[in-house]
Image (tube, rainbow, N blue to C red):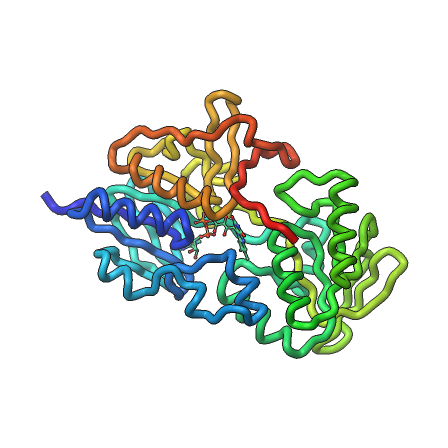
Length: 338
Ligand SMILES: Cc1cc2nc3c(=O)[nH]c(=O)nc-3n(C[C@H](O)[C@H](O)[C@H](O)COP(=O)(O)OP(=O)(O)OC[C@H]3O[C@@H](n4cnc5c(N)ncnc54)[C@H](O)[C@@H]3O)c2cc1C
């Protein structure tokens, strides 16, 4: 019988951990790790510090491309999966190659969320999700003095810190959707606003974004409430949503993310989803929850790999650690101080 072939899609903390666990527990199996990003495994949490010039590119990598060879994992970086055919046990890559698998773990993470009313301004706003995004920020930031941050989420605070360290003038528009996935009340908004102001950030709170218009290569005119000003760059930070659009025709169960049971199984034998892209069933509350955060992703990646190898480990999340954000149950391992 030929060796088993396990495929992991995604080389973030969840996918990387899943691939390593598979190889460690089933050394005889073939493990392929596919990532549309060209780089090795890096820590997204370090991107704001990299942007600020506090650490070099080398310092954000946790595993280089060569390290996978040594571990016996075949890394296919810079390759995008465009479809999954669960019944045929095949995945389709963007260059039309079809790859067969015996077991599959989807760990495709999230993508930046832009709320519907702001979609019209999409091309005028930047986000920060990948190393490539961070490089784009670095390239553009040197040419501007003022940056407007809209949103946001926890990343927006880290980016604001980085911008202050770079000597930029920062305007911050606290949106009503701000700090997703955390729940915020008026007191918390006031607290964040005070902290930002103390650091010299001009904050707008409870103001409507009326318009944005490109005035020159490095200036966008923004109207917020009664204020009109120009910003060199605008960052949109509204959290991440599961990156599952490419699976729409796959037949895999989708809602907000990839629906899985408490053992992270998609309902198809040998096919699991894990990390930020999964929506996990919780038997006690009879509802699904999503995970956000680096440490959660790693733990979920390991559980998916063990279950693919035959265990039946449920993901153990205490009901009191789940909170409700706009009707979605969320569990996060992420917190930071500003
Ligand atoms: C700037 C930033 C700062 C953050 N800071 C913190 C922090 O301080 N603390 C914290 O706990 N969390 C933080 N997070 C969140 C944390 O990084 C995520 O929760 C975590 O990375 C999720 O891991 P994941 O493996 O599920 O997904 P991701 O890390 O999103 O990885 C997804 C992987 O899938 C690949 N992929 C996606 N689609 C395809 C496809 N179609 N084909 C092939 N490959 C594909 C991507 O290239 C990537 O390799 C931060 C995130 C960002 C972006």
